[in-house]
Image (cartoon, rainbow, N blue to C red):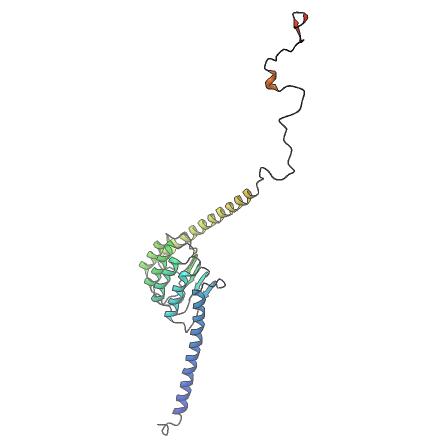
Length: 258
């Protein structure tokens, strides 16, 4: 064969070298994700953002592992996996993260392969979530449809924390309802912040109140046992015994009692 096609071996060798280079690059990327996954599992306090956006080599299985590891993480704030070809298998793993994680505030799922079922699974998990304030799933390969959009809007009525939703509704009803829901949540969060601020101020004020005994330089209190030549008021109201030789007045005359 190499006699008939003298360039065959050159082509084959270059193809093998290219494939080997791609495999080595893929292995390096995989090892990088392994290290990142281990940091998520160890709950590294220095890591607060998991961003794998636009990764061409990350696998669906790795994305699912990230979602599962975040269930027990207490420091990550952002889970961003836009344009990673994530499908419904990844979407079905995210609800477990949203139900168990108490630190995530932002989930980014733009430009993936999610269907309406996968998106609904994520949205329904937000009904009882109290930390996520931003959810984005723009530009999916599959169209959600009117029924899915209605169900999304109804599910998000029960959420009082979400303030940013990255999705363009096609149906008029949800498109008009969602801004009202998000505005309501913003007002509720503003009220909560004001209440927390008042509580902090009250606690600081109460800690600065003067105590009954502040220091040794205290204003002296009046003494109850004073050394005067007068009798106490209680004794003045009582009849006093007569002493020998006491002078008493009888009419207009002074007499000495025996």
